Image (cartoon, rainbow, N blue to C red; front, side):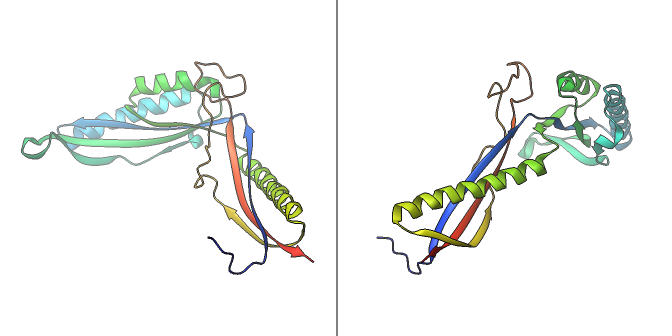
Length: 212
């Protein structure tokens, strides 16, 4: 039997989510080349990076919206154990690109792969107003916690007093989904990469004293 050792008031947990149409997409990808010698692999990677830059500019992606790592060089091997074989050197350049023209994402991805991007790490849809949406969700989470606490107080025949504790809770740690898939609200087409909306969530624990 669970006992409350130090009763002091009413605590309630509030959760809220705000939906918004995405207006931004972040694309992360890599250019990876393997050649027999460092000069050859650097030359191959540099050529591919140049084609990637040209492709991004052709699609209207400004340079300030592109982040690129320095060329990384590592030994390249095939196989495992005693069958492991040295095949040369691997050179990698990583890119992170922000695009606001969501309708152009699919053709951009096709052209990036054609230009030499041989590993797509992620395509993430987001909103530029996430800070404002998060603030709205937090206000609504506090309101939800109050409604729950008032229900408990009414059922127990007491009244809520002053707020004595507010604790922010990470909604993603609590398992709330961040994005919705195709067709989940909105008018996104079934073959469109853009999800119907982005969900921004907030959660809070609020404690009230009991008014006597």
